[in-house]
Length: 372
Image 1 (cartoon, rainbow, N blue to C red):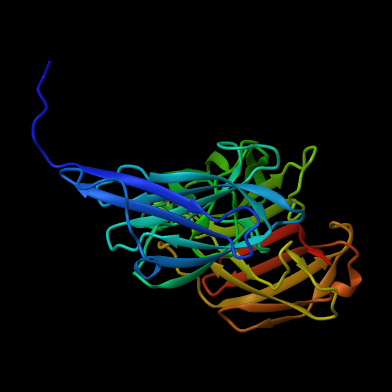
Image 2 (image 1 turned 60 degrees about the horizontal axis):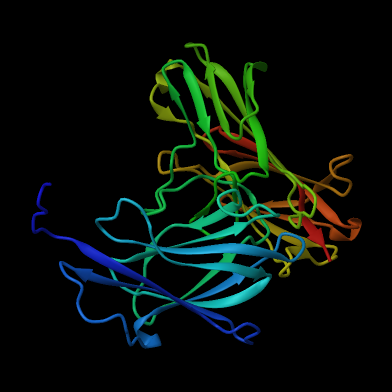
């Protein structure tokens, strides 16, 4: 047997304390205590709130009330993986909770909230936050599953950097798209068990292959310049007992020109982001003018130009018919004014945007939000 050598190590204790059931102001302490080279002292710790960071977290429900699974992790500079501080179990949504977490420059905190629809870990749709280090006494806000849900981009959980969702290698295009993303910056998710869909690529209007496996695809394309259109469909399977009502489907179509000169480059895809005012169940008021702010983003490899063209349509019968929506194009964002008085239950939205670089995206979100 080889003897262990004296070296450097670190032990991390994870502690959680939750408010009693039925508390008027719910709270959750998620703390990490580190010991370098040796475990010092006992397991009793005295911590004051002013030494911690406070996160005012709002949990929205995309439709009906639901129970979310929840996990709080930390990341240390030497970590290969996230370190769990404990499993809280379930949180009933909609609700609001004050999180108090470790505030330390070398301890980053990340949270995962899973919308299950009868499917628990690891099959739930796990909305994940990028790990952050907080300052003692700082106050933050965070929202989960707020309306504006649409396909987003995966991020490195520890750094927050965007992971490439699709690229060209030689004369091959590949994709690996994320699942749903809510409106909180830094959030992302992978597809859960009930998040279905597929991808299809078109070259000069002709399909070069359809993949019915989440957001994955792999296609051969010509070396010469060609007009490409990549389609990603993300569908929420509304199985028995579902509570996720909106959106049910998202179709995203990206269009750009490419050739062999784009070898080893991520694709210049535009990802729409939305900002809209809703209640705790992601439902909007039935008003004549309902503003929705739309912006576009991408990864660190492509900075979208100013929005040069913007068209928005709304449907009140799940896409059976469409109504043009007036838009105000401010260049960096578009404000669409939807007439919610024409809706009885849900509004389906279609947004078509083009930037100054000639890249365009059309996104159709079925039952994008509900009406109260």
